Amino acid sequence: MKRVVIIKYGELSTKSDNINFFLKTLKNNIDKKLEGLSYEIRYDHGRMIIFTEEVEKIKNKLQEVFGIHEICDGYLYEDRSLESIKENVLSLLNNEPFSSFKITVKRSDKSYPGTSISLASDIGAYILKNIPNITVDVNNPDVNVIVEIRLNEVLIYAGGIPGLGGYPVSTLGKGLLMLSGGIDSPVAGYLAIKRGVKIEAVYFDSPPHTSPMALKKVEDLARVLAKYNSGEVKIHVINFTKIQEEIIKNIPKYYLITMMRRMMYKISALICGSINAHAIINGESIGQVASQTLKSMQVINEAIKMPVLRPVCTYDKLEIIELSKKIGTYDISIRPYEDCCTIFVPDHPVIHPDINLAHEYETLVDFDTLVYEAIKNQNILHIKDTEENNFRDLL
Image (tube, rainbow, N blue to C red; front, side, top):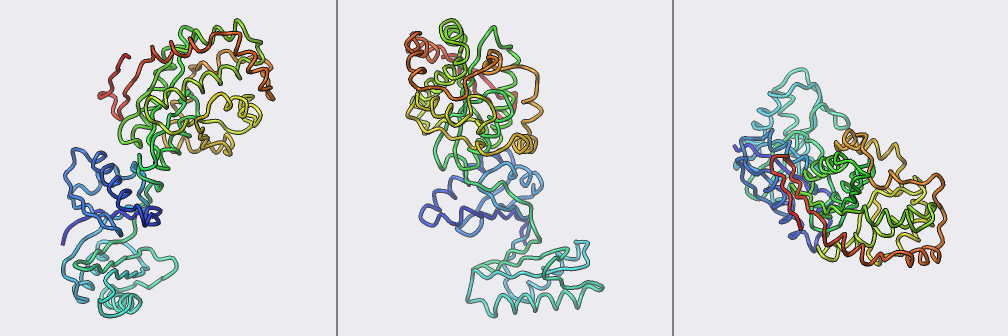
């Protein structure tokens, strides 16, 4: 008998042609997450099995890894005889408080004698005979014991805990998250990571108009996201002060947000090109603010050719807040430090901007030079999922 943690794949099982790539990536991501713990991993197309004595620590870590449907704590036996299976199920149930149970048998080895239903019935009858005052409940049992009969072994386990689902990080490429420090953008980043996108982030700093604590807030948000993003989020910090001040000085106030967002998109697209990212990701939600009407999105998006992913675009604010609390970013996001998108908001920003006016206003400022300087002088922060491992590179 060996104590094991069993990983079920869920959505990954549909990737028949590329499943080896997805499983190898999942295994590599798990290795990164479990660094420092004692374990051994074995996997095939049906299950990933982790041999370990540090079961609880490993189960906790696995709950931060995308690509896992369910995590089960169980036992592996080499003796596949029906009598041995009955005894081992009985031993497992003797350690469980319950009044009703169900036996589920799965046979990946179809040559094993009997059917799954008949084997479950035989095992269930044996349990009823040896444990008093219990009943079988196939619909809502207190405990569901699963017996998986494989080619050379048997897995026995009772229930499990949900994984995060989604795809393993990096299997679907890289994206650049516009991380503002608010509630929405970290949630958008989390949802992108869930779909297998590894993220880097860009933050637009505007000293002295923004506080150093606003940047610290963004670093702390990135640290939360790093838990899900293979342990690190790289932040490209752009000094946006000069661009913002030139827009305020030369362009009508009601177009201020439209023009700022166009410049942010241009800078983000150029960074994407330099880091081999395939899309920009942001926390825009349709209609939430003036720059997030469909017309505004169209005019702002026109500044670039790079795809823009908006994972929370159809969520309402309460839904976004609920998810931010679940992933641990909400309390950080509500710290009272404004970012550059909120400090200069005009009283009446345009909600249906005109693309021709946007083009005309862009001729009033030498934006190409300002964008080039901003990217050239960016700072890159490497944010690890543990604070003591963070470091900064100055480019």
